[in-house]
Length: 228
Image (cartoon, rainbow, N blue to C red; front, side, top):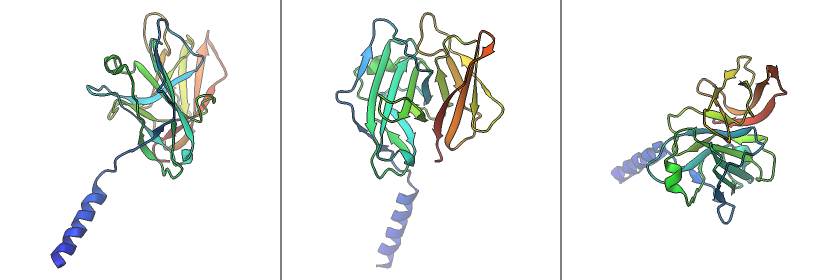
């Protein structure tokens, strides 16, 4: 009896130490909406991606850190290729008892082989609070293709700005964003790395663009970093 009791205690300890599997959000769009376009269709969105991106030899995966504040709400996932020739816009439902944490988002693409061959940072993922018909005012950190170890970044369509800077939270030192080079039209042209940013929870990010030598009014978004 005593040995059985000790065995049970050890089993519970092992289970409690094991990493919890990420929950799966319910795909609310039916059918899954994605397009491969004959020519680039460039949207007017300034922020096209907030993500970590990896490379995968298997099926495409998409995950995100969903804050507890989004429990019971709809979220919109917009995925776009840098050349603007692939785009997917779908909604997911967060359960009403969501406690916050990592979640898997089903991605039943018909173009798995095509998407697996793209280079890193050639896909922009923006997961925002609210339906896809809402303006994106809050975004969660997404992971495309198991982006473990990859640095997080904001992908920006700067509309040919001279320079772009990101101010994160209360920091007075901006993140200098780098151009993403691509011939022809592109869905985004700038990458703002977040590797040296230390933030948690809901954090305001302001994007400042310099156009023709002058600063234009900044664009703000609330970015939910892990740790809410």
